[in-house]
Image (cartoon, rainbow, N blue to C red; front, side, top):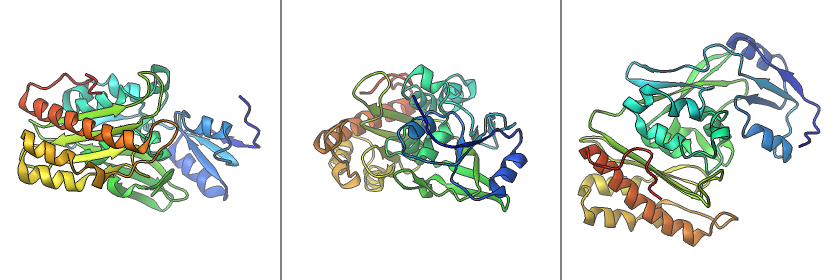
Length: 296
């Protein structure tokens, strides 16, 4: 692999130093955490920065903890960290379920949840689940701190709400109420290292409106608000789920590409929605499939 760019490389040891570097000079800057998206993008000439700021030495960015009723996920927390976290398994097991479907073990050991949503590719695995969970993205710059609801984070393929000079320090995910049920279903060509052809996240909380989001079937991850409203009004019996499945084509806008055709994605979204809603409802009732059981 050859990367033929004249790059300045910075490896700050603190957040203050990071922000100082970002404020020093204008330029096409890339922030590096795991590098599983940045390095291939450099190799394939998809990006052409003139400097890289490596965040791996910055203290505190790898924190993973429950704080004030929310899961705090630092920008250096990897998918493997999520899979291995007792707090995640105890309080938000669907997050570990999603993390376990990302690429391969080698990629999961380096790829970060925050990096996944910062890459903002339409097939990013974390996007739909964070949408369904109501996550918030926390940023800092020399001008101060800022918080963005994940609903407002994705602005297009590889485009997010981050501003020049900002660093995403962490994501917070409100912990669902006791008795909730959630599921993540993902379709890909292989069980190994492959991008999603389509995916769906479902979160059901007692007395609340269902929250459902799809990925890889629109320019950005999308909430299925018509389906949410229907299930909230009609419940989760077989007839309501049938009606919800009938709305899938109104919620997503898949394309045909090398991984799947538009028609196939639409059909599989219907299958995934039915299985994910059924699994989430079963988990809420205490008798659904064990988290991590493939639904596709």
